[in-house]
Length: 363
Image (cartoon, rainbow, N blue to C red; front, side):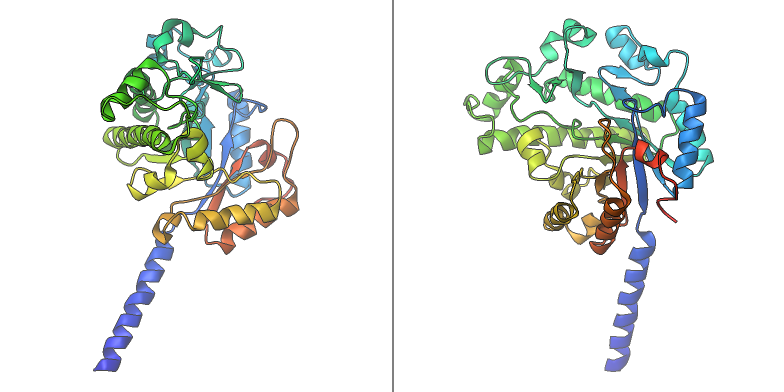
C-alpha cells in the first residue's frame, strides 16, 4: 500500500512537471522601431518586415505606436488633445493596421509598443504642442526645472491628467485594433527619480506624510519608494483598464534591470510581477559581453520566483542606430545562456539585425 502511494505521488509530480512545461509560453520576439529603420514606412516594407520575422522563426513583434509626442496610427485621442491625429510622416497610411493584418496572416503575435510612455519630447521641447497646451503636466526636478534626463523631457507621471491621457491612449488601441498585447518599456510606467518636485506631487506627498515636504535628495529611500509606489499603482490601474476593455489582451512591460530601474526610473517591477499586473516582463538585459550578460541573469534569478520566471523573457541588444551589431558568436551565446537559466525565449532590440541575417535565427 505504501509503495502504491509513493508511486501515485511520483506520477502526480511527473504529470505536474509535464503540464507546466506544456503550458510554458515561448517568446521569440523583436522590437520594430520608426527610428533608424524603414520597416514601417509603407505597406510593402511592412510585408517585407513580417516575412523576415517569419523566416527567422519569430513568434512576436512589438511595433512602436507612440514616439516623440505622436502616434504612428491615426488617434482620435491625440487629436482631441493637440489637434494632430498622427505623425505627419505616416499621413494616409496606418502601419499598425498593416502589421496586425500581415502579422496575423503569418501566425505572429502583434503587440502595440508605447515606446515614449510618459516622455513627450526628445532633445528639443520648444516646438511641441504638449508643452504649450499642458504646462501643468510637466515634471520638475529639485531646482524647479523641466524634468529632463538623457535628452528626454518628461511629464509628471503622478499627475491624474497625465495618467488619464495615457489610459485613454492605450485603451484606444486595444478597442480599435486586434492586437495581441500592449507594452510599456523603460518609460511606462516610469519617471526619472529626479522628478517629483512639481507642486502637485509635493502636495500629494505632504498629504500622505503628515505635512512633511519631500527631501531635497531625490533618492532618499522613503521618498524614492513613495514615488515608485505611485508609478506601480498606475501600472496596476492601466493593467486593469486593458483587461476590462479586452480580457485576452496581454499587458507586458520592458523595464530596465532591477534595482537600477527603481533607483533611476522608479520602476519596481518585481513588485508588478508579485502583485499580478504583468503578464510578461521583458527586462532590458543590454550587455556587450557574454560574461556581463550572464552575471545579470544570475542577479535576476534572485529577484523573481520560479513561477514568475516563466513570465520573464530577457530583452537582448542586437543592434543600434550607430551601427553596432551583435555578431553571431554573441547572439548564439546569449541564446545559450538564456536556455541555461531556464528562459524560454527573448526579445531582440531591434529588427534591423534580423533583416540582415543570412540564415534563420531559430530553426
